[in-house]
Image 1 (cartoon, rainbow, N blue to C red):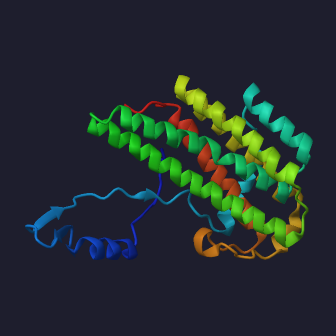
Image 2: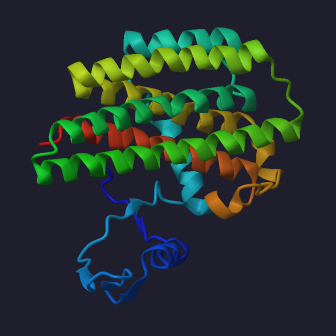
Image 3: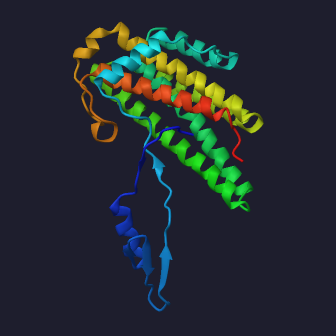
Length: 272
């Protein structure tokens, strides 16, 4: 799905646990399994699937250029379904951007990736007799999970900013309403993917395009954020930036990456 994704390898802790529980000794790409009372067996691992690292992290100058690129690019022509989600959000949370509005949007943003992951597992089971196809489908599942994780970090970061700035959240607007919208979006994404996967990818591209412009516009309209230090609550997992403005620019660029990935997936929506 990603045209230029980075990769990361599994950490040593999991390997240590694997060796401790199986009695295996790792030798390069070979593992010698010694289970008590059984014959020794050497397993050769030629390739271990690696999880995508997620959207690229940009430096300060790149983030500013990314913001200007977004502001200079017209929004996509949104479908009726997309407008059906955007309009209620603007009515309930205001047309202007805010941390509470963005946090609500990030709750919804994870939904299509969850729907695609579910459909992917169904497809793997359905095509389990065709190993090459099942592997390609599973790669899509791994990518969908990585995108969910990225959106989850966005949500955690936004919730942290909401708490730090003391913005008020109510049960109705910030718990019940997002859940209802997410419930609707999930099932629409699931049904569209079942009928026409390219429609589901297109709808997600529209949502991500909307989010990208919302973040970049919010930073442009609040220049004082360039002088607010990034609290770095999740710096170890997401990166630390010079200011909250740069932090939000990075999130906006992540959304652009998700949008481009969905548009790319529309070219070959079904894994063959």
